[in-house]
Image (cartoon, rainbow, N blue to C red):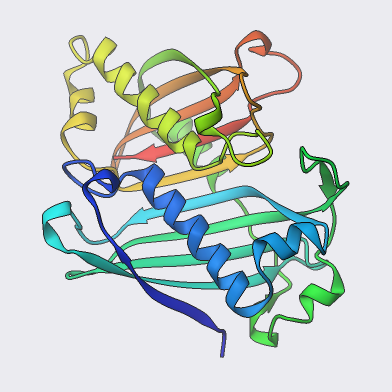
Length: 278
């Protein structure tokens, strides 16, 4: 049976919007949960980096809001997390987290990361590698799956263009400051969820009068977020977010392309794509 780690986390007002847990807060809780599972069952994050010279870069992430959980509802929530190695060459680590409140599971996340062989410099530079055999051996047979995890973002975007109606397009900019970063001065992946949410709010502020339907995106909670990361932003990079809003059969959807402001439309392509469904 696949192993899990379960523990209580104390809830505070800073984790919430009026409607739900903030997406960025959920991302931080999910990263902490995956780090805890690795410490409990394989090795600590610090040992992974400093002794095994292995890091992980997040590639795909899914966040689903299942049951309501607001700040007045509970003092704590139950976190449960599992992990498994995926891919025919142990090329991915997939971590699944649930956070449960009084009404049941409030959020569910799934994150797939790619292992990196680290060079040993302060920037934690590295190149994709299969997870070393010594670390794979720490996983049980039912924690290893040969089929790779696949991002849903390309199919979602294609579906919006094919079956939905584009309502508005907008562009926002932000700079990556140190409080957005992790230890190696690259953006901390969870912060990109906040950049996308801010871009959505700016789009609604600018276009909500002309397209009143968009205001629903400010009045209610997010249902689901899907993300794929292609490159990492660095400290003090000026980033540009191109956001498009779509009417779909299920409601409103927002697609955010994050890239370098000076490289818009360049050969490098986007750094990340975030899809929010309201």
